[in-house]
Length: 227
Image (cartoon, rainbow, N blue to C red):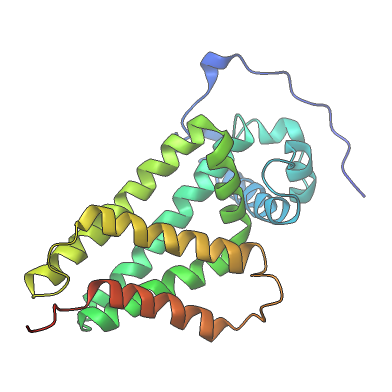
């Protein structure tokens, strides 16, 4: 049964806080548990209904909390999604760095980094569906997501420059290449993990991941033909 709640009064526009701002409610163990309940509920609701159709009352009901309690943690569902996007970004960035720190070759590390993004996306598909949709309509969220994405572009461009220093992919623009590869990865994950894949094409996790990794590796690790 759905928890019946009384909607909280609308907040004035000038009270909106950045999603990352600490609030007293999050400082206690109970507060952190409630915050995590809202985040997990949002993942479920965004995956089920999409970001555009998701309501704060639905998120609160799925969390087993009141709408009034939600507003102790977030001003809007966009604020909650920003928090989820930052959480995803932190996890994906950490996983992407691990294979390089492990001393794998450039190509092997790249494959492992792409696989890490794929697995993180699969685990967090709810918020990633929300991110894809919100970036088209929520200006404040779009700006923050572009900041996070920009950090990833910088890391990819650095890897491209390193490959170029080793004689690979001469002449390509590192930043544009990074943007194109990142966009391919994000949208491919959205189509296959968020929307269920292409029409009448059977899903195969191994094939999909191999296609992603192969395209990325061949886009960077190539040398001009001797002539």
